[in-house]
Length: 110
Length: 120
Image (cartoon, rainbow over all chains, first blue to last red):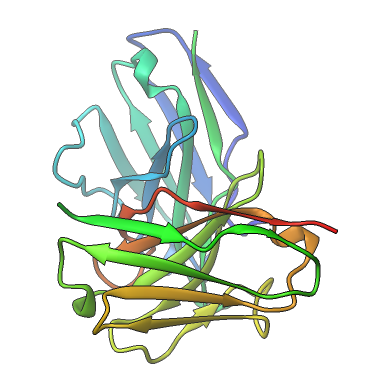
C-alpha cells in the first residue's frame, strides 16, 4: 500500500475537465515537491508535471498541477481520447527515506 | 538522441539472482542520479532504488532492501541492478529512469523496460 492515495478511476467526456487528487502527509507531499506521470497503455511512464506546477518542454498547457497542504491535484482540461491513461503522483518521503509513487488513477474518456 | 535501454530480464527461479543493465546515451550520464522503478503485471508503479551521480548514498524501497543493489559505471554509461534472493513478488517490468534533478521523483527520461519473471 502506498502512502500517497489517489482515486482508482475517473471518467469524463471529450472536451471536459478532470482533476486527479493525490493525498499524502507532512513527511512527503507536505514538505516536498511532487511530480506527475502519464502512462499510456503498454508504454513507459512520461513526466507530465514536476515541482508541483512545472511542465517539461513539450507538455501541453492542458495539463496543470497545484498543491495545497498535504495534497496535490493534476488537472486536465479539454480532455482528448489520447489522454486515456494511468496517472501517478510521486515524491520523496522523509520518514521512509524513499521515493514513493501514488496508487495511480485510470482516466477514461467516454 | 537521449536514450535508456534496459537488458538482462528473463525467467528465473525463486531464490536465484539476476543482474539488470541500463545503457545510457545522448546525455552526460555521470552528471545525473538514476532510478529503478518496477511495475508488476496489472499493478501500479513501484519505486525500487536510486543512485546519485557519484554512486554514494543509495536508497532502496523496503521491499528490496538487503536483496537488491544498485550500482553504476560512469565510464561505461551504464546503470545496474543486482537482484539476489528473488521472490515471486519481484515479477515485474523493470524500468530505469534518469533524474531531471535530485529529489521529488523528477524522472524525465525512461527506458522501455525489461521483464523479470520469477517462477518455479
